[in-house]
Length: 103
Image (cartoon, rainbow, N blue to C red):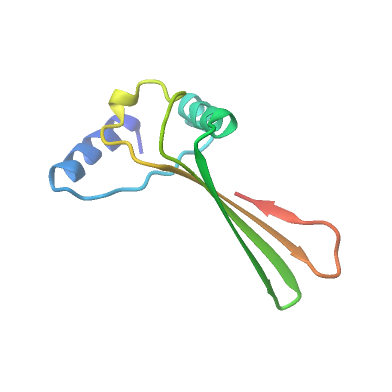
C-alpha cells in the first residue's frame, strides 16, 4: 500500500478513535533505518524474553519496546505515534547447535 493511501486510511482510523499497527519493512528504507537507529541508540527501551522448550525445540522470543523517539524523521507525519515494537524469534533444536533466526 502506498504511503499516501496509508496516511489517508490512518487519518480515518484516528477520527473514529481506532487503533492500528503498521509493519515496517526494508523497502521503506528511510523509515526502517530511523527505527533501527532508535533501537540501536535508545537508552529508554523495555526488553522482554520468553523461552519455550518443547517437542525437541528451543524457541526464544524477544520483544523490545520503544516509547520515546529521537531518531524518527518527520514524526509529524505519524500522528499519535505510540510505542514501536521489535519482535525477534530464534528457534533451535535440542540436538543441534545452529539456531534459526527470524524477525
